[in-house]
Image: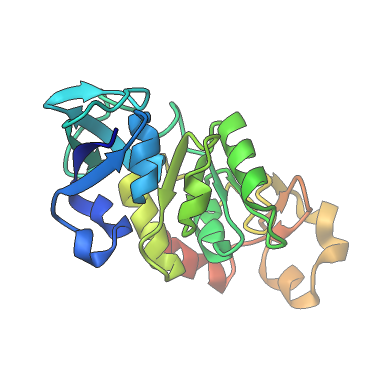
Length: 241
């Protein structure tokens, strides 16, 4: 016997719906009662984007089984509402991330700001990203809805912007990262920690002009990339401000 429930998706969750279905009630028809999580994803919304679900004005979890004629409202993480005590938008502590192959620019900005960001430009594949993100409690950032729908993803976000710097601002706002900025403590190239190093230790790796002009240097403990406060430093500092 066919049954049905009515869904209403709030605010930016409508980004995932076809234009004809946005900002209005959607009738969901089913035979065997699915979990509300499965129904939401079948309609098109990845579960990490969902903050609150109300079934007949009662808060329910993803495990809730839909009943005939349920009226369901689904809310996103809305940055103007303080809902941190209701449901967690990210793991406790300083946010850590894992990004898909198309987000190299965003990875550099986040590392520049001092965040632990896993990224590989050879494409790890959706399963690897989802599984590692879930296992290490990292936030999955992507523009691939299918990746966010994987069950192993616990924390994740679909980026609305396409420009890398705009994505950086988008992520900073969503996860309230400003208070956790620690610029120039992560290697932009490999994500390793950066430590101060004496000029004498790395002098054989420097160009003559750099040796003459600069005396303070930092080095990545992973890939051994060397950093100093050249003209690029001031530009990046302004960007962080």
